Each structure stands twice: as C-alpha cells, then as structure tokens.
Image 1 (cartoon, helix red, strand yellow):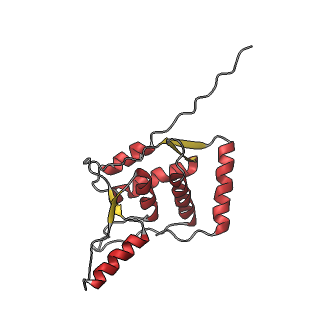
Image 2 (cartoon, rainbow, N blue to C red):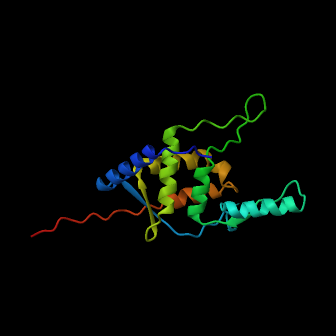
Image 3 (tube, one colour):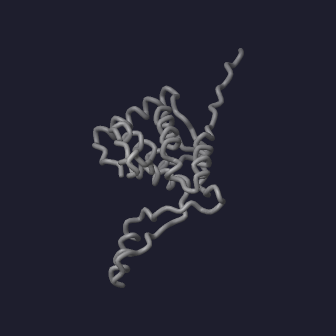
Length: 178
C-alpha cells in the first residue's frame, strides 16, 4: 500500500500538473474501458469496495469459516492501473539464501507519482487520459519493473505497455500564410 500523501504534497503535484499543461509537457493516452488479459479473459482483481469485502468477511465469520474467497470483479483498464499503483512494489525475487527478498523501499517521489497516475486514471476525459511527461515515464518504468509479477499471465504486462504507449499525437497547426 502507498503511504498517506500529505496535503502540501498533493497541492504541489496539482501546481506542477497545471504548469506542465501550460507548457505542453503532457502525454495524452488513448483510453477505452475494456481490459482483457493476454488469454482473452477479463482481468480480475479483488473488489476495491470495502463494504463488499466486509460483508464477505462477516458472512464467513457467521458460517464459522477460518478463510473465505475474496470477492473479485472483472475490472476496467483504469481500475487495473489504480490497483497496480496501490500495490507496488511487487516482489517475487529470491535471495542467495533461497528466501524471498523483501520488496524494495518506495520513495516519497514514488508515492507522489503513483498518486498522480491514480488521479489521472480517475479523471478520464473524452477517450483519453492526460498525465505529465515525467509521471508517464515513471509509470512506464514501474510497468517494466513490476508488471511481470503484477499482471498474470505474464503476457498481460505487454498488453498494459501497449495500451499505455498508445499516445495521442498533438497536431501542430501550420502557420497560416497571409
């Protein structure tokens, strides 16, 4: 889970985002809701609705079960990216002694960039997602670094990268001749 981001940091990110928009240093990614895994099946995540999770837990406790299946949903692409951002770092690496390595530490910059990605994917506009160039570069690095462990089957990571690389090119207007 990402650490809580202080208000001053959120405001700083918002001001940086506005400045980047004025300077045309933004990426616009084509967006469609539909998201399938590499095998063509819907991508499934644990239902992010806390109330649904709570009801499942209470039903299991009432039935005196020690464990229960987590409620899942077929997610949209935005939900998959938000889930991915909320669960970095993923780590399946094994150390020299054969024990799992602890996940790498996240920096405050990582938390800020993750927040910016989540905010961007929560504000889908007319078929595109807009984010700052540096945040986009960071997101692509995270998908490259953690995507293989996060998006199973493995080829789904390639689909995520392909979807994120579908950038809308800004059409520059040619200067008008008088």
